[in-house]
Amino acid sequence: FIYQPAKGCTYERIGSKQVTIVGQEEKRAFTLLVGISAAGDLLPFHIVHDGKLKHSLPSPNVPCYNEALELKFQFMFSNTDTYWATFETMCTYVTGILVPFWLEKKQQ
Image (cartoon, rainbow, N blue to C red; front, side, top):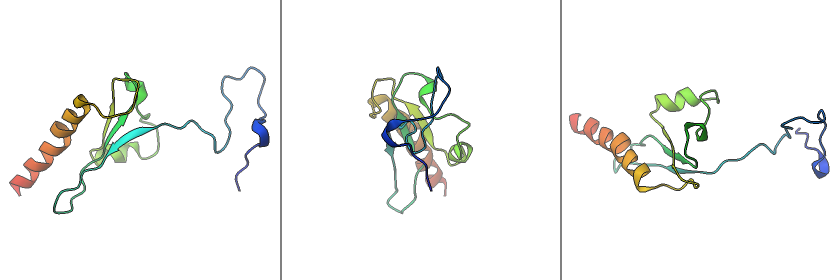
């Protein structure tokens, strides 16, 4: 059971800076690049968020953030007003994910 007030009505102290409504939390869009090798290996995810600062990225306090880092996920901000991949973010994907993957496979 999830309680969601009807017609946008909420109960909170007058003057509160933020009022939480279950099911209507802030949403964020991002670009997720998923790479899979011809052998079926899943490469680490490359996630591009909008914005120009580190604060545009997910907080290190969110659930599973450390697990994502252990899996070598790459969180980036686009340095633009959109969450679209750019030439710079793609270069980071190549140098930070593809090349290390190829080098590791080459050694095997």
